[in-house]
Length: 183
Length: 260
Image (cartoon, rainbow over all chains, first blue to last red; front, side, top):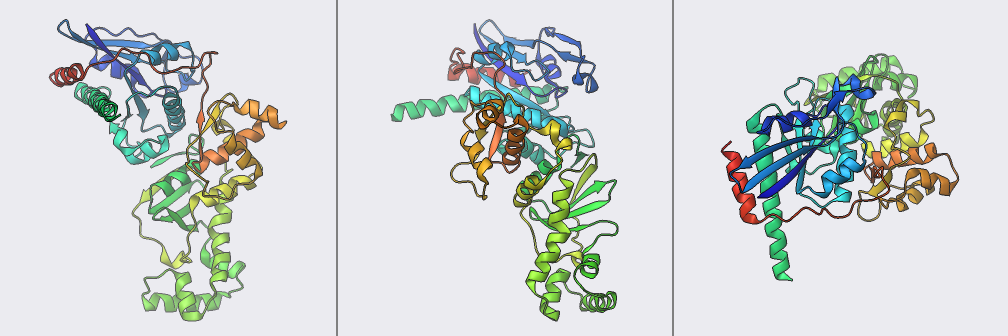
């Protein structure tokens, strides 16, 4: 069976666990524990290892979705997740400007470490104090083409984000094949 | 666009408004300070007890009666120009006088506000500019930021926003920087290699790491570098080693997902 692995990353409270749960056909394996540090100010629990969800199509295709740990510590868990990923999506809570810096750090980290297709999904845009999408994009330092609004609680929104990411992988694959042929 | 300066520093907000070519007013509470923007540039400022007119009287040597006459004529003329420009055209004011007033009205207070303690901010776009309180001059936010952060002495409110000592820097700008950098900034710019931590740089320079963090914050604020967290473990990651997926697989997967 061919498996595509997508990593969902982002600051605390960006909706990573919800995103994985919304699309998964199995009960997600989450490792949420009571938050004890400054994270507790934002939410009661946080993911200490990773979230895992899966969508399978027949016996030939499967999509595995992994959520990174909530707290921003770039340790062995990131190593494992990134090393085996095909693409990633960075979620940014549009209503928490205090999280933009963390999102930018994560994006810089990912861009420097791996050359993978990615998208940046802005969540919580329905909250009245949420920032406009283009300003969130600028605050995170991402090209507008890679930016999209995501509602992590709504399956159509999560599926649409995943489909766009897969299409991005496909386009990149085709482009690299074409440049290989030219060489 | 709103928030608290404890969440996102004013330096970052100003950079974003410049980048976004914003037009409107940025208001800071509780000080009721208004900073006016046009096409991504700062054009004026107002606060209770602080306006262009008050600056003209208190520091520009203009008497209240003269100002009153000029203002009445400005209103009667129904001018669509900023008051400052009108003064130049009608009363032969010198641009350098306006430049000095603009510096007092906008540049100096913004530099001071960079170190301001907690305040709420809100940006309201598409507000009509208060032309009677504008000189007609404008300032590039990033240039003001760089000057303001260089002059900043009390960094306590920005402490949580500084890059981590364990992080490195990566360049975000191709070619020669568009700003005149000072010696320390140039030196740090050369260290933006994605490998050397700020703590190591401080050690090499024989200065406190806080000094390097502050210089790094300045370069980050004007978009020349970005902070790169280094991996906590000794091993640095190489290229991803995931198995390659075929084009057919990706197409089928996207189609199947769409049917969910």
